[in-house]
Image (tube, rainbow, N blue to C red; front, side, top):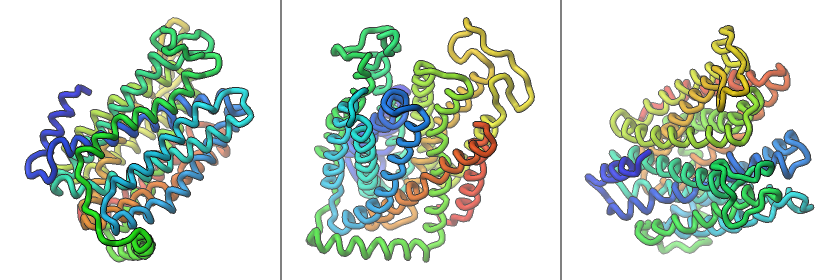
Length: 465
């Protein structure tokens, strides 16, 4: 995605603006600043390193990583709505983002010490990952709550979509830097570009994989600064922190009750819970499916991640424009429908067939990357997932911003985080159980189709969009 397209998207936010262009750019850079933690640590580099090099075996590694993810999700489910309500009562959001950012930086730097052969490596990796995940997700709650104070309602979709696009682009750039110049294969001792790793990073001790933690921390520190320097915050209220905490706890209860009294808000939050579960599982098992069915290694997975991020950037930008033109609800419904069709397509693939019954030739040794027809189809379907994931998530937050009053945005975005995380274990668990029962990885996408259908049906009932 060309940077000029992002600039044009930012310029399009300016009519009827509430904040200046630099203020909006500062807000947009938050997603850019955070994304390397998700891209490098959670998905494509550190997580596979943990499962393959730190854990006793890949199966137990995946289980331990899943437990850490579940623990982080539980803490996030408890903290997000409470802290969001407190932030609404006290006013400013940036002090909370700074506090979460400090935790994220410390937790990310700690990952460097999760070295092979060290007795403390596994707990350091899991604790650092869990704390970092909670910190970055809670910070996003406060960042999202700033949307109504930056642009008028008719620009919510474009602002949110551009933010997601900035995040995807940041993830892409960081992934290219790490795979191309820092993380080397322990066998060939070279990076994906065939180079020696920079700064003398030792491939045999997996320093290129471990550097993703400090790299993500430094990236965040540099690129979050504009948010603090040029983006205006909500004015501070006269309420003390203790009173705000008491009021925040009361507001959580009242917000949940209020959401139940407003069918559109409550039904949307429930729908978000279901389809976000499916999306989490799609990303969690996409690489595993490629590795298990097609035998993909680091190069195939890394390039797949880069391509997926590119389509995600484009999709988030286009989705934001569609959101402002047609509304958030049609964009979300369309994204869910496309994801359901993608799951059906993945379900139809095997190592030597497509569309369930159409046979294909197995890949030959000299066919290169993604040599077989099923692999090519899987890559194509993965790129479709990337293109609609951004609009799905961006339009979800813009829809909520339209449904709730601006002065209560923090606590409602806390509930959005809660609804997106409180059952985030459910879809992966359902996939795991179905896979174990039927002894095939194809059971995964079949289960996710059911989740997407339920989410689609629930969202259809949301009246105000």
